[in-house]
Image 1 (cartoon, rainbow, N blue to C red):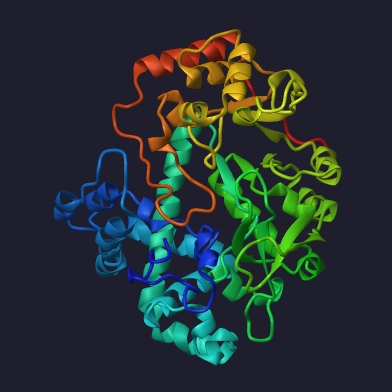
Image 2: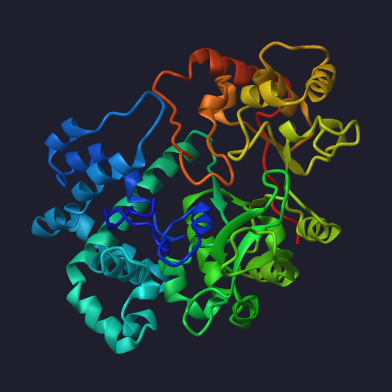
Length: 472
């Protein structure tokens, strides 16, 4: 996804960081929408792209997508949208676009659009390799380049306007149907991003603007050498000094887009694993204290309520649990983790309290069918015993188990609803290529799937389930 906006075959930071740093998910902004998600049929119907483009959509193997091919085809089309708008602007869109810019420019849109325009101008290289005047964000230079690249900057802003517009239409439709959208906030951001470039003082960077330490986790269930994410780490003292301004804006934008937020790597707010920049693995890191309760107290003071679910998996300490429970945030329970250590395993439903969210598996797990085929015979037999001796359709057995639990919410990957195997796995942590390519095909979900889900929802009283607001 590093080629998303420039359309060039580059991998940011690849020229001056170890190969393992490319394992983290890369995005150039945590505020901006991904224009690859724009509905081009809607754009064609509104006259922003030629209808003939709809006849040129590339084909992929069933259930898969090749992002390189998609980017090469779609981005050149999208980059022409603003030109068509500027040539024949409709008054309604023009006013709405101006209102969108007025709402977002100062917080993130100006910096983001300039960043993308500069990145394209300089051939996709990292901002660390730009001219010093831009690397250090000298105001005169920024103003000069903003004028020089004005049309491309406006074009990037217009794509964001269209993305937010289409997304809000989708969200409104879902909400009208009684469906809430659960979004995600990964704790860290990408080094080569508008976020770091525009807020360098908020990160632990050296005088040359390179990270002093980077993020990851120590050796764990997923990897013997840990996971080296490579993201720069926040300077939490400076963030707290301005009352977490950047984070509040991030949460605000996210809450505009979704109804609930999953906080990824929650334990990093209590303590985080910091690895010296340049290490090849995450082994040689150290735990450092995070902002803790002060961070969430500040958010609560600003937002009054925080509809959060927190990812509290991995190496969780009593301090992390205390932070989670202090703010009454629901944690996560993964059923695939439940059967390897006997009756006291905290992921077994009989050990749940109500204030949690149960999953069969997450995006980082194999599908339930794939998982069940690979676990040890002892683990498999205990799982079968726990399920009352039932061996058939293991994915739906775990779906039923999650539904019947006391967890306040039950979430299942659609691959498990479809009883698919490892070929449909979404992500393999620590593997840099080939992830996130699986796609749901039209017609795969049937009325029978809907009937079975509705039946279990009714049986276990989940039709009116609500996530309570955190107590204050």
